[in-house]
Length: 260
Image (tube, rainbow, N blue to C red; front, side, top):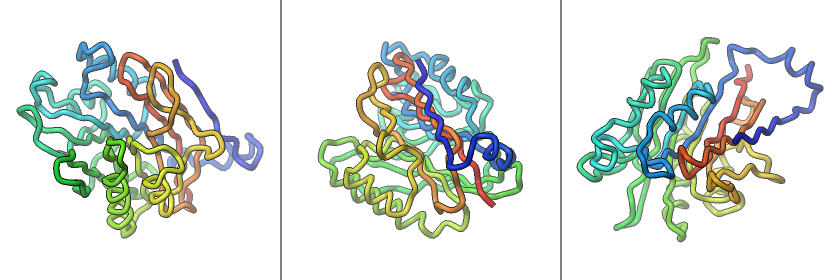
């Protein structure tokens, strides 16, 4: 099931479309893939890949990504999904886990100029988290940054607050227009999201946010696409993709235009 929300810009549809530079339009998907398990616990990477392939994104931020763990049957999930979707894969370790590693993934239609894995702060005994950044060049010749992340999941938001502050601190120095995407484990108006929105412009409608969790009956928004600086991007379309089998999260697809 797909729930499509199209953001109507201030100008009429025809005028807006006439002004869009297709070489600067990109589709961004964020998707928590439940470490490949699916909600049936049958480890069906084709079901997960199908969501990605049908969304046809240029960039994908993947969360709950296993790298050669026992529970993922020894697979490198990002590489497997990238092969299926014909996108370039990159994995970033957040921690060692179950005979392998666990962390973030990015898939990209375009090659990587540079990449970096930024460790995020966490309390002793809690799960480590990371932010994975790629720098790439669009068909227009513009250089951009794309970041995928997954903030702490616990009810207490202490780690999420510190992780949000660290994301702002590190990436406020970026030279290039930047997109931040991921499972932020906080609802609109929560302290971590408010901290992020001091720097980043969110793509969702604050008056009517698109719910992304759980996938069988979404009742809250915890998956986001944000951008920086505000005057270099505009949102063209948004889509919540609710596949109740592929993952317990909906995938969230946002179409953005990079402005000159």
